[in-house]
Amino acid sequence: MSATGTWNVTMSTPMGAQPATLELSEDGGALTGTMSSAAMGAAMDLSDGKADGNDLAWTVAMTQPMPMTLEFTATVDGDSISGNVKLGSFGDATFEGTRG
Image 1: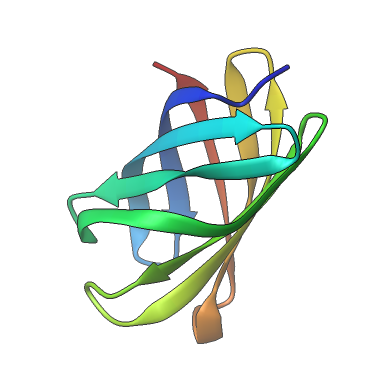
Image 2: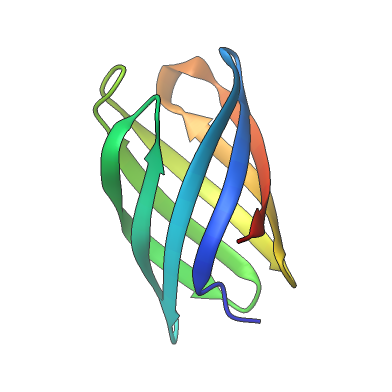
């Protein structure tokens, strides 16, 4: 199933639940899009996006509230998405959401 669409996700971080919106576009094995949340300020582009069936991976170079690279892996199951995000030196967090 294609990951293309708008996803409302919540990351379970050490600083508590962080809601975000993903705008994803899948074309073959390429995954592009943006991620936005109130905590991170403006929408940020995804980079290194890959789609392999229902498995996705991408990175986001976050600048707010502090600079760090977020590394995402996810699985799409219909209109649900879930996965893991590496938070730089702050460890890992899980996230889940639904297509909006």
